[in-house]
Image (tube, rainbow, N blue to C red; front, side):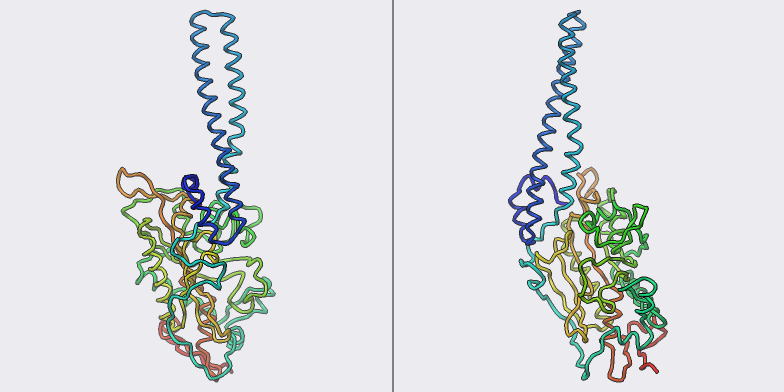
Amino acid sequence: MLDLKAIRQDPDGVRAALARRGAPETLDALDALLEADREHRALLTQVEGLRAERNVRSQQVAQLKRAGAGAGTEAVVAETRGVGERLRAVEAELGPAEQRLRDLLLTLPNCPAPEIPDGPDSAANVEVRRWGEPRQLGFAPRPHWEIGVSHGLLDFERAAKISGARFTVFTGRGAALVRALIAFMLDMHTTRHGCREVMPPFVINSASMTGTGQLPKFAADAFRVDGADLWLAPTAEVPVTNLYRDEVLDGSQLPLRHVAYTPCWRSEAGAAGRDTRGLIRQHQFDKVEIVHFTRPEDSAAHLDAIIHAAEAVLQALELPYRVVELCAGDLTFASAHTYDLEVWMPSYGRFVEISSCSNFQDFQARRANIRFRPQAQSPLNFVHTLNGSALAVGRTVAALLENGQDAAGGIDLPDALAPYLGGARRWNPPG
């Protein structure tokens, strides 16, 4: 959530920042917010004026009664009653006006960080660096869904029977690979990157979804539990960030670094036809997520740290990738600054997103009311929140199958996973 005081002080600056996103409806929402704020403040002024007038008249009534003014007192009492009635009428408008103001504030996205590139969409994103060279396979690469089915790792048909399209059953060594990747990633982030592992609930309430920015805008992208104020977690970012909702953190304990594994559920509304085969765009998928809570002055450095933690996983798994800085028009709703990590997929002939690392600055903290006290007796301030996928597990499986395939139909596995796969470094061709 943006700072309402900052919007009042510099509406043109906020307008210019939001305009970089290239979404005219956002500027319309800003105009509506400014008008709602003017109306709300006008009501507050009326309420304060009427309360002051009522107090003055109440004092006059008391004085007249002490003086025994008789009939004159009744006239002032009637006038005081009239002021009270007008006050109650205005106060009745104040609550809805406050709610409208908050509702409009919740619809505004975060302002892009000044340093990120301009541009309307992903075509304007900027490649920062690459790591590793894609293998020259010397044969037409098979897509991961064919490799996985032929090796008995993936079963899409039975998943469709159980749940519908865009679900997967991992079987045998496929299930073991998922479990191995989750353990490997968690071990890396806890031992090498200073993260504290948490395992949160996998269903969360609307307040939590609102705190991180999924609600109200993205309700259609989430799965809701019928008959309860609960949603299936779209990402571990939501429950982990909301661990500290409505809390004041001790500044001496910052930064807080957490890592969590969760299954994730997304309806992927509007994604038909885009990478819907295989494991790239599923309704249910597994992910290991890093979440940091920092002082504002440290958040840029923590974004770099999260990116490097995600890169460390890809490098250990020997997967070629590139790092891309997102332009203003391609940012997610809550992000101020985002880098995507994209892994090389041979059958696609291109890089595919496998991690998104974002700095939300104080946007989520304002929505979730997560504050800290920098020092004893100092004023409260909002933390900065950041997170990054490290990594999306299903996409990592897809990348390992495609990059590890050979002409004979076997799969070479990275050395780093051998301790988690009973020492296996290769799966021979089926049959």
